[in-house]
Length: 388
Image (cartoon, rainbow, N blue to C red; front, top):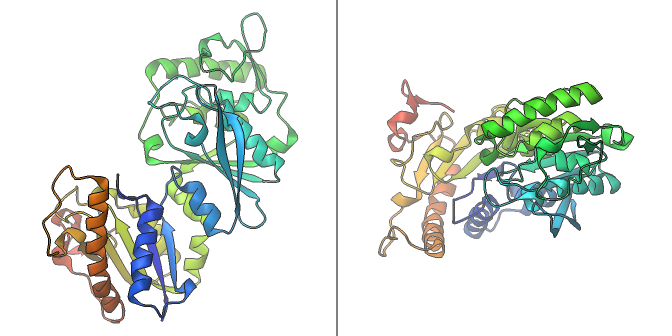
């Protein structure tokens, strides 16, 4: 029988995307013990934030390396570097692991990001995927590029120390970018923006300061630094200007880097199970990438919502998908009350999921599975059809 592709989103406060995918995989294997190891392929739908390193490294049989770096508050921290694939040519860095300062727009330094980039290049990486999740230190990524050889000078012409959390961007009056290495300039950098980064923006004061700095960079180094589409920390400002980093949607970038799309295109998968939190968190664009990449080979699409289908905003689901709500699965026990602990909610969802799995697998074996449109909110329908 064709393989099962299993994608999962995080269940807020209950499961990470990796845990959600693992739990559903465990229950499917427990139901059908004839499944071989490679018959079920799980894909946590991480978006550049927490879990990105774990997914890309483990999925590609890569490796981890723990290194010391400067934290967002100027302290020393130990953080993981990931290297995807057996050749380790793609390094994976979660920016929040090193430059998180606890709140949006907080002061601090991104110097440690540059140290991790330098370490990854020293280990032989050619490309670097920077998973961008807010909040980060709001120094516009200049601390990171300072760690890579760029010098920022004050009014007296003295270099400004950028690895401290109290650096004022207003002190920067000149820049010397000649210290960047050839290795740095010949490498490729990708910033994968998580939802928290894409939905935030810098303050007016920070944006005005960046406009001033942009003029300085053009004057002193002939570097064009864009102030468009920046997050609250504006880390993209420095990374784009001095590293030529390409900023993209984190979920799509992680999917590409995992090479899952290549496996999907091979036509090995006929069934896609998507484990989603609620209507508002259905990663439609990422699922569309999976379905498009399959060239029509994936014919059985099932979306499992942890909440009732009547809740949320009624986000669009794939055309022809069968939708299930775990809250509609009947259990012979008292319902979980509002405000219950994460452990209680987790246990309840797993019991409901375990009871639903036999129905999912039985339906998968039928070649004429069609969508149950009665279970989908009206807001997710278009002329009698459901679209992505």
